[in-house]
Length: 157
Image 1: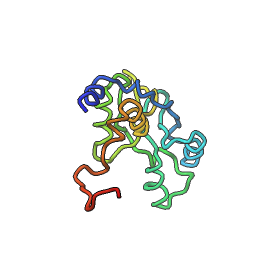
Image 2: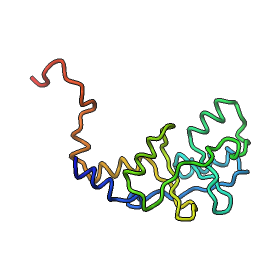
Image 3: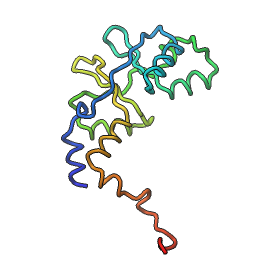
Image 4: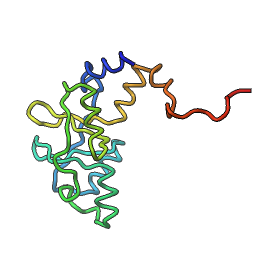
């Protein structure tokens, strides 16, 4: 477990190979975003003007801000995106990224930005989980679902 904690502090976000960023303009529509996200099988798209990150549009935004409110799919992304999203830098530690995922709101996607704030990619919780499973299989796969739970009866015959 100590090795896992050390590696999370030493390994950087770039080691997780963030996915390329899907970019859309703020005037583009929800329908265009959904089509692009489906075509690339991803859960979010970055909303940018030139090289400036304005926001992120996720499946959660689609459900909560568009469908639940009965808005048309022709709604511009600027009206329904999450503005000024929490971001990570490629040189940030994985532990730092994990802390950002756990911020209030429960993020599943974090835009990866360079030193000038330009979007470079997207880091997903899924990539972190794969990293943990690949690099620490014994630690990950041998954890009980709930360490505080005890079986009422012994297992086996």
